[in-house]
Length: 441
Image (cartoon, rainbow, N blue to C red):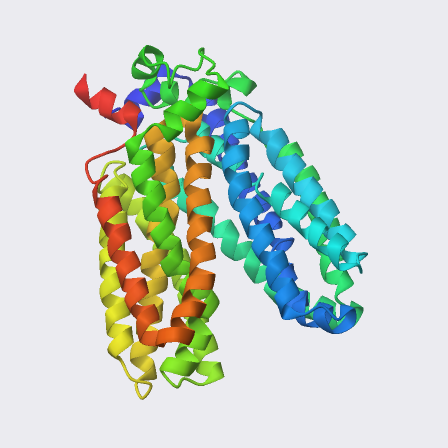
């Protein structure tokens, strides 16, 4: 392991300070940018009731629009992941945010259902350009021994963006109408796109700075390996092969499928589940869902830090254990009664805390296993499988609840948690290639 002291002896203090400045600038710019993506994604749910009333659109129509958008988003994450690994992340993220903002403004002027559906589907296509450049930036600015923590910090942008739009959108709706729920966030997102373009830079090398491997003492390993050597540019087929022909990437990708079944079942069906299976009040169910969401922020940060500091860059142990305990807690929640709301609340707090770690670390692990040159492709692929799990969670949960009752849903969640834990434990001993090669020397 290269210590901080040895690292500083290789480069001047001014170089280290400049490098640290740009790393910090990159991180907060990504947080701002990705939070802005959420402002013009989550606003749709707030506007749905008013849209249905004014345009006489049925809930079934809205459901079709949402399903099409989700499918395009999942496919887009994989497609733009491949593009993102060979493109300047600054441009990809800026273009995606800018065009998504423009689509939101168009939404505010749409009244015909086919146009409405097409514009929102296009919005999700451009939304899928947000994740891949962030994966590229994180892997090029942070080493594998610290990226878990930094990825978790960046991931808070999800909650930041959601919290802002959920707080502000109802006020916009009541004062100006549903169209401005799209127009005003769209205009704001354009400003954020300009800020992101101004703040971001693609890689340290683009600023004539040393690579992150040189700054952390891994340069000799990187230069000897094609997948880490900054002087070697991979072709698209090589990038795809590096990501999709890696069995460890498939393990975490399949795990992500089951993780998202668990996570999205609680996020989308949690209040209904509590109301119908536990007899909770609407206020109580809402409070428990807030607890789930808040706990996930801290759970993600803790999981990232522990995987870096205690497990030396291995994501499998933390993720696998989280999903195993998650399944146990779901069983406890299943057998709890509505007369004990405190137990349900504690369970939801713990479930939110536990599910965030695997959700974040799977993306980190995919980037680790594929190397930084295929990080966007690998994490985009796992994201696509995650959205397949999201789609199944929506349709599958509804079918199980209607046909067999909520007990069948609980069984399905527990089974999914166990499956995720198994796939994640298959990666127990694995870490980033560059760290494995460094340890062999």
